[in-house]
Length: 139
Image 1 (spheres, rainbow, N blue to C red):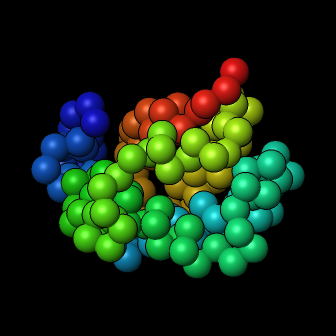
Image 2 (cartoon, rainbow, N blue to C red):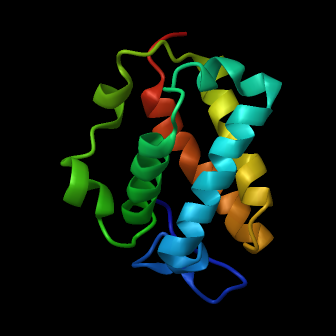
């Protein structure tokens, strides 16, 4: 993650600055819940929603655990699920630019619902493009 210090006084992308700005484990879980709610509600996200199981509990858990460590907090994903391999985990799905962008739209909607500073929301979405793009496996 790129480093940037913004209005919170924390340095995003350094240490646990991003994790703390996101509200720690509780804040990350709220973001993830809002993300999956958006995925279920937005017509633009139907294709991405259809890639998931009907019950989203495990998906919610995995994303929250991934984001915790990715944001500089505890490495909760690897504690429960093992090493993180984003492209491998998604290779069974057909993910092109449209699916990547729908995923990012859901994350934008979710981030906009959080009490994060605007500069952190912008930073977060720019950084999330990287794993979203790494998941893409078709043009």
